[in-house]
Image (cartoon, rainbow, N blue to C red):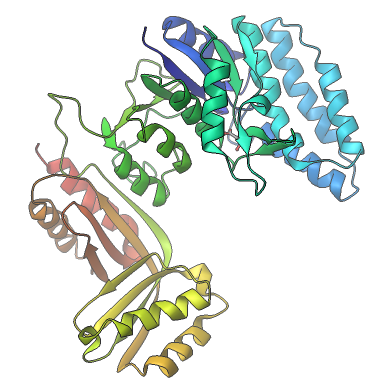
Amino acid sequence: MRTVVAKFGGTSLADAGQIRKVADIIREDPARRIIVASAPGKRSADDIKITDLLQECYDAAVEGRDYEKVLSAINTRFQDILSELDLDILLEEEIEALRHHLEEGPEKGYVLSRGEYLNSRILAEYLDVTFVDPAWCVYFDEEGNLDTRLTRRTMEASLRPLKNAVIAGFYGADINGKIHTMNRGGSDVTGSLAASAIRADLYENWTDVSGLYAADPGIVDSPKPIEYVSYRELRTLSYMGASVLNTDAVLPVSDLDIPINIRNTNRPDDPGSMIVRKLPKGKTKYPIIGVAGRSGMSVIQIEKVRVSDGAGFSALVLDILKNRALPFEHCLTGIDSITLIIRSDLLEDCREDLLDEIRQTLAPDFIELMENLSVIVVIGEKDTESSDANIRVLWELMHAGIPIKTINQGAGKLNLLIAVSEERYREAILAIYKAIEKQKV
Ligand code: ASP
């Protein structure tokens, strides 16, 4: 029988109405056996996520401030859900346990995890299925890192025998039972681990958008949804700031070729985006699937005649960055030049210092720092030559009169990187989107 692990995010489970929608989705397909739940998220743009309220309680307790008002807001949110769904969970006891823990000198993992814990118990009760506490099957090592191997084994043992279950996302425990949380948005990772542990046929990730779009909807009006995207393309999109899925959620399922389907709880009939290694037979994909970008970038351009004669020069430049623990985003080399793309905020306190060190160590013929840039990545993979797609992108930029500050492409596949000034960023995205719209398979 087909098995689907379905993870529902915070907005999908923000209140009783949303939980009803989620229950309908789950009941509609019996393959949706293992459900991963987030804490209640925002009900509207100005609402506060339960995890943020829990963080407020924790901070107040640690700093000796009063947290009763926030705790009471958390209680009310859950109480409203329980009353509307006509469920009888001993919420008072749970809130009392949290209050007691806060009084005794709280542990952050425990406090922050209570949103997922309670919401998953509520969903399990509503669906009348088993609740699985990840404190017993998601493990962290002594350094606080997720122990993926142990987690997969224990999750498999816990989940496989169950016909249906709800497991809380976002947290686990170390071998002494101390609760640890993942990074924010970590329930995506729990879902991915569960799907890999039971070797599910599909990992569904239900959220509040109908998948990934070919461009930022904040810039392009109604951009095309992306039907198929590869795991690698998704990583690039996420790296560039598309935040539909936690990047750490890709690896556990991509290892086993389990596809991820991003779906919209509020529009369950939309097919969403499929994240796969290879396109299914009979499906074709456009050479360029999307465009994404990030502003707040700086470029350091270093020129010296005969730079390329030996490997030493580049190594020295990178050593300077390494010794300063200064990460760079991209490094492009030319015959007599090296270009470094670095996040501007990282240069804030060391701009002049860094340029001086490069001048003193390398005696370059020319060095320049360009600031207020945006880096745009044109995403797509094709086994064939990709210059055709590149030319279309560059043609649109030229036509829009947008100067290109730097440009680069790794070998083979399309993943074209272009830097433009921040002022022209939106125009550049709109221009490149034209190339996406005009393409034919
Ligand atoms: N509730 C957590 C957060 O707000 C984790 C999650 O939703 O995945 O980040």
